[in-house]
Length: 509
Image (cartoon, rainbow, N blue to C red; front, top):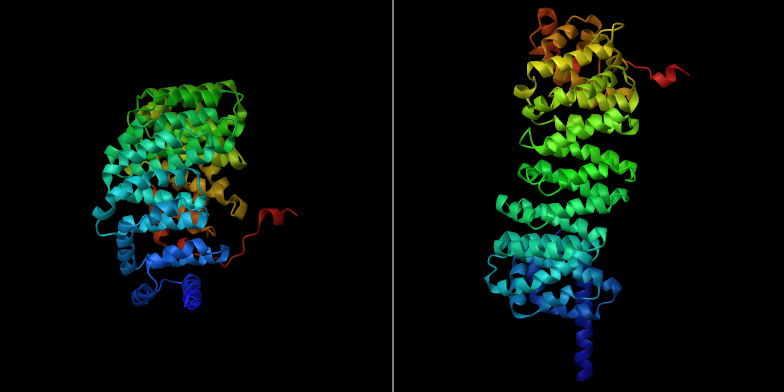
C-alpha cells in the first residue's frame, strides 16, 4: 500500500512537472479557462511544496510556470487566500536558490498591484518590507529589480508605508560601501519622488541630496561612479526645480566646484561635472540664485586660465544654463560675454567636434529651446550676441557666407554640423538682422529651399529653420514666399533622393 502511494505521488509529480515545463516553454499567457483547470488539478500549495525537491533544470521551469499562472485573476485570487494562511512568501524570500527569490518578489508585486483588497495580509506586508529591502540591496540584478517593483507597489497601495521605505533606504542602502547598492537606492528614491510633492520633500529630508554630494566627492577618481552620481543630481534638478533651492544650503554648489576645480580629479569627470553644473544652474527658478552666480564665476575662471581641454565643456555648460529660462539667460549673458565671443567664433569658424559644440551652445543661448516668447532677449544681450557673431566672421566674410559654407557640404560625415547649423538658424531667425541677411544671400536661400537633404534628422531641423524664416520680419517678399513654400514642399520633405551626391573622401582620392 505504501509503495503504491509512493508510486502514485511520483507519477503525479512527473505529470505536474511536465505541465509546468509546457506552460513555461510555450510563448504567451495561458487562457483563463486553462489556468482555472490547472488550479483544479494542482493547487498553489502543491506548487510551493514541490519547490524543495526540484533540481536546477526543474526550478527554472517551475518558477516560470508560477509567474505565468499568477497573471490569471482566478489564480491570483487563490494565491491571495493561500498567502493569508501560510508563510510561503517569507520562505521564498529566504530561499537559497536565486530564481526562487526572483519569483517570490514577482508574485508579491503582482499581488500588491492587482489584489482587490490588502486588508487580509496588511500585517504580513509590514514583515515583507525588511526582506524586500535586503533583496533589493544585495541580491541578483533580477531579484533586485523585482524587489524594487514590489516595494513601489507597497507604497502605491499602502501610502503609509512610503516613509518606512524611504527611511530604510537612507539607513541601510545609502550607508553601504559598495557602489551598486547605493545606485539602487538612488533609483528607488527617484521613483518614489514621482508619487507627489509631499513624498519628494520627504526624500529631500532623508539625506538624499547629501548622499549624492558625498558620492560625487568620494568617487571623484572613479569615472563610472562619479558620472552616475552627477547624472542623478542633474536629473533631480531638472525634474524637481524645488530641490535646486536646497542645493546651496546643502553644499551641492560647493561640492560641484571642488570636484570640477580639483586637478587630481579624473579629467573625464571634471569635463562631465562642468556640464552638470550648467544643467543644474539651468534648472534654477531664481535667476539671481547663489548657485548660478558661483557657476558663472567658475566658467569665467576656467576660460581665463586657458585650460583648453575644458573649454568645450564650458561652452556646453553655458548653453545648458540658457536652455529654459529667459530671465536666467538675460542675467548670464552680460557676465559671460567674453565666453560668448569665443563660442560664436567656434560656431562660424571652428571645425569638427569643437564646431558642433559651439553651434549647439550658441543655438541654446539664442533660445532655440526656450519657446517663441522667450527667444529674443533684452537689448543689451541682443547686442552682445550680434556683435559676437559679426566679430567671429571678421571682415573677410559675412555671417551668411559662413552659414552657407557649413550647409553646402552634404557629405554624410558633415550631417551633425548641418543639424546644429539648422538649429542655430531657427533661433537666430527671430532676429531681423540675421533673417534679412539669409534672405538676401541667393545661394544660401536656394540651398535651404531647394537642395535635397538625405539625413532625416537634418531634414526635420531644416524644416524648423525654414518655418522660423517664413514668419520672420523679412523685407524681401520673394524670399519670404520661398521659405513659406519650402516648408510644405514635397521636394524639401522628400525622403529619397535620386541625384547622387559625391562623398568628400571619395572625391579627394
